[in-house]
Image (cartoon, rainbow, N blue to C red; front, side, top):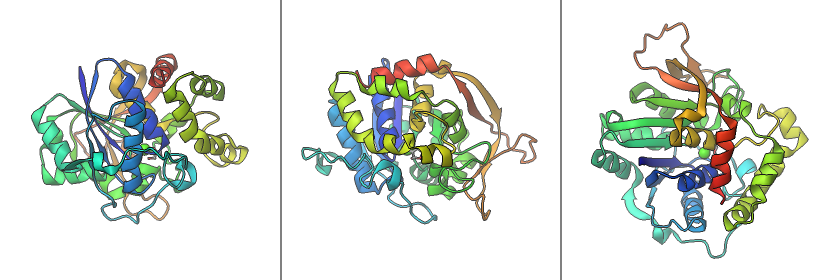
Length: 317
Ligand code: RIB
Ligand code: CA
């Protein structure tokens, strides 16, 4: 049984990643910790509960984490995910925040890992603020982790939020720097370019959403806005998102569920640029080993798309 903690900024692709994990056999979600990001924290909390409700898994604890980045100016991605972060398709019967677990997310994360030393896989699909605070509060926290999977960063300086910045690493650049500097557990990164290269045909997306299930109907509703945007000609032209359905967060989640899904990867030391006029938030890949960093991360290069499609299809069954 894999034990997961998922740290999210629930938005649409975070929702897809959570639903993928919930549908995966042999995966136990110990808890979901929420962070600012795609939308303000209040919405992230509401959206995460909505996802658990449609999956009949409101038994999974949801924790309130950091509502602000460590230092960066706060930003959201409402133009893509919707003002509410979930496609601006409100549910009048959405679960209330009274269902949240009262423990602070960072303290909960530390407690769950301490109680399951060496067994917890942490999947981070949003800005890394909670993870950065965790390692400040409990310096050896990362040593107790089985593995860390991150959706974030880039390898070819391609940005989706700034010229050279991917959203999660731009939304809290200092947190991304701290995590990639301090965590020495096995770390796997699904970068922006990797997700673009691994995008799926829109025809698959249509089949995926056409499943005759409540989960598919929910996904169709919450993803309508972002899909319209992603399929628009100008987005395809202006963005580096590739010519297809790019569910960024699910690539990190799929690898955490079944690491064999990653068919090609590379081990290399990385850091994050804090200062550059154009490059703040960019992930720096140290192929020349000039940074003399002992710890290397595993950067995903290619994925078994058939296995990936299966995990996605099961997420909405
Ligand atoms: O750059 C894409 C990432 O930023 C995804 O995690 C998306 O949900 C946003 O958080
Ligand atoms: Ca996310």
